[in-house]
Amino acid sequence: MLLGGDFKKLYRFDEANVQWLTDRFLVENEETRGGALSCIHKMKVCLRYLGDSGYQQGIGQELGVSQATVSLTVDRVVNSIVAQSNGWIKFPTTNHELMEAKRIWQSLYKFPTAIGEIYCTHVGTLKPNRHGDDYINRKGRHTINVQATCNAREMFTSVDVSWPGSVHDSRIWRNSQTRLQLINKANVVLLGDYGYDIEPCLMTPFRNPIPEPTENIWKKCAEEFENGWGFPNCIGSVDGKHVTIKRPNNSGSNYWCYLHKYSIVLMAIVGPDYKFICVDIGGFGKNSDGGIFETSNMGKRFEQNLMSVPAPRFLPGQNEICSYVLIGDEAFALKPYLMRPFNYNKQTLTDVRKEKYNVRLCRARRVVENAFGILSQKWRISYRPLETKVGTTIIIVCTACVLRNFLRSKSGDDKYFQFFDPPEPVLGAFTDIANNPRRAARLAFSTRDKFVNYFNSDMPMPNI
Image (cartoon, rainbow, N blue to C red; front, side, top):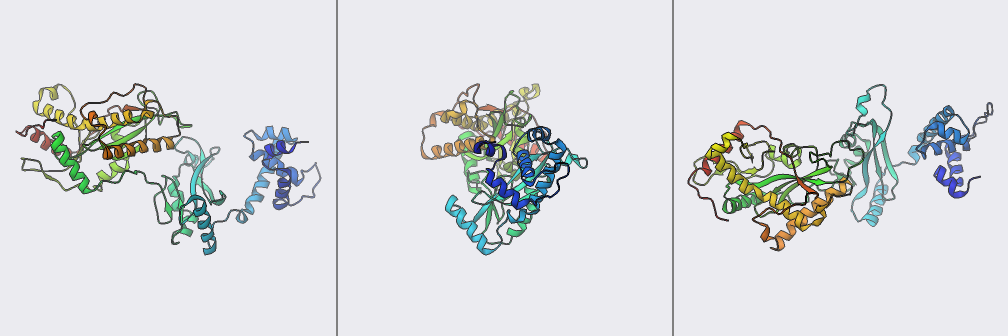
């Protein structure tokens, strides 16, 4: 006979609750031929299977039944429970239920109008005979993507198990009955993570807690880049850094970078005063600078001209209009809004005009390198690989960037960093990203030619 603690460890419930579950969900079977299992025995078989990571055959041997009996019993018991699931998984729909859910959430978590949280998780499964590839998720495994909502008491209020693993969380949400129930409700929201788009009925975190730059901020940056770094119409310097992390579970080679370690990427646009203007954190370490920037939110917004960049203007002393641009290294594609140096080869080294352009661009671009160096010097946690979950690492790095901007705004204690690149530890969390040159469009070449002409005019280089 099992003691109370051992019984609960095996079946996840004490004996009284197992008996209650049996009475509630199973009807007593009077069949006795062949030694038919009693209802309490059936419930134990099902609970033992659900609570154990082993195989049906092993559980059957432990409980004195065959593997086939375990399989048949589990199937019948779970179907009996699911048939009555509406009585136990209820989403609030009436005004009274919604008000009560909001009251409890507000009292526990201090978030007004919220009634619960939504999340998706992948549950492994065998490859189905039909449409098996639909069930392969981003980690290369066959799964079902399960969407669930829960209330403040951590009880499920809705569950959707009908989607294969290849389907994204946001698509499941857009097609869910839960969304249809909430879409027209006022002052009622669920809370989700970064995998969802924000909606009136669904609140998600800010991806970038650093305020989005306005047109005036860009103009101020351009003025300071021109006066301090001798590069007009420049609104920011862009670059990426590897943040070394502990290998995430089931991540494959996504986070494995060319430095032979696991990392995520901090992609940042930095102003002339070493403050972070935009950041994107969490790109896979295996990807290049240019690829991460193009697929990031800020890269897409620049491509779609949605970043409030000022209208083009004349370069000083020139009679051609030129757009405002970011500056980056060879890893980025040349774009009308992003300038990069000419590739360093024999032709460039013997072409004085191209070499002069490269010198001026690299001189101004170093602000982003210095900003990463200052970040490492100020927050020594980056001196070692971060042994936290990827989500936590993203928050840590973002926090460091925010605090860096705060210190830069409130004090001048890092003035002495302005004119050199602080050394970074070899084994530190922040390391450079390998160059992966990308192609450019004709308009981008035309924009770069305008800067080449300007830097080879009589305009003097400012002294710093």
